[in-house]
Amino acid sequence: MSGFISFAYQHDQLFAESVSLIDIANEFGTPCYVYSRAALTAAYQEFSRAFAGRDHLICYAVKANSNLAILNVLARLGSGFDIVSGGELQRVLKAGGNPRKIVFSGVGKNQEEMRAALAADILCFNIESEMELLRLNQIAQEMNKVAPVSLRVNPDVDAKTHPYISTGLKENKFGIPMAEAERIYHAARELSHVHITGLDCHIGSQLTEIDPFIEASNKMLNLLDRLESQGLHIAHLDLGGGLGIRYNQESPPSIKDYVAALCVTVGQRKQRILIEPGRSLVGNTGLLLTRVEYLKHAPHRNFAIVDAAMNDLMRPALYDAYHEILPVIKKAGAVSTYQVVGPVCETGDFIGHDRKLTLAKDDLLAVMSAGAYGMSMSSNYNTRPRAAEVMVDGDTVHLIRARETIEQLIASEKVLD
Ligand SMILES: *Cc1c(COP(=O)(O)O)cnc(C)c1O
Image (cartoon, rainbow, N blue to C red; front, side, top):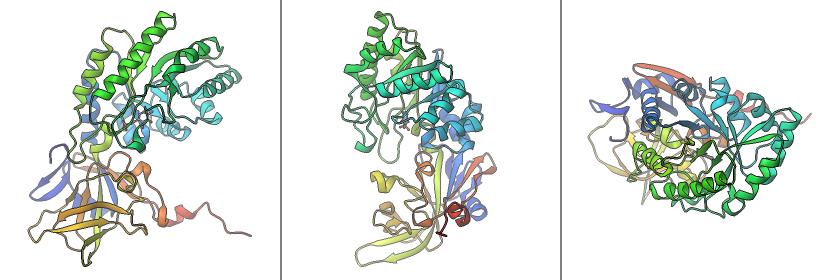
């Protein structure tokens, strides 16, 4: 059970903090996302402690899990936020996040999103192209504001992760090419309604080695030193997110070692350090609780058909990602190898392949490490209402998102007159 600080067996029954998952399933139904407040707090504090005396800001990447309760717990701990849309801005503000701790990333910010973020007085726009910079300058001028900006520079570093979540190679759509960064910084300096505050990069997600982070940081620091020597003042260095977690056999660096390595690389420079962790803050603080509907024994394979599907947890279908699947009640009996699949009409609809489990109809299973990119990537495919979400805090369970209803799902649709 190592790695899951708040999910552990007590007398062969899996608990979230002090609450049995059986009780949660009985009260809230399945599928249901279950988060631990203690685990979330511990992860945030590990980041925050690792920075010790250094000027820093942890900007949680909201897209990993944007539930208001998650955002609120982090806001109370003093967290900042990395947003990628106007919708995420509204969520952070509604959850009590401080706009002066918000950075806005993303390659396609539209005009309304820029206006809303300028009106909220966010900390910084992470700019990903020259055209975006010019548009922001224009909109800021119309609003009689000055927009704080960082350029997101693409360091051309191989993050050695799944190609869909690698973002820092020169062929990726993200960031400004290193070779153009200096010119665009100087162009930005000439614009009347933007103010340069930082330098930013983000090279990918689920990185399990420290070297790519250091390589990217060194490239950023070279650029930073050149810009400063040319008279540009860079107040903060944003090194992005991307630290991996343990889903299966991975051994990513600890939060502490990762932060320490970044701090050593930055050295004596005076810039404030920003980071944008998503997965490493929330990934192992949540699980997806699901119930076995049917067992089906085909000639060469055994299927366990559960009530959670790819619309609830897309990562296996999208990236062939592995999630550990644990029985909520450990029991004796014959072990079989199961394909754990959902009810959706796609062969790609699986939660786990070749899992050795002792199963009967109606058993509960916990799909682990589902706190990041689980609910936030969920959909209504097959007209399936989205799952309920609960947060456990000691012996209390809070419903933080009610299960969707079919009525809600079709409410904005209309037939022809
Ligand atoms: C997704 C994203 C992150 C967070 O990545 P994790 O791997 O979840 O830490 C940080 N910054 C940007 C710009 C992102 O797009």
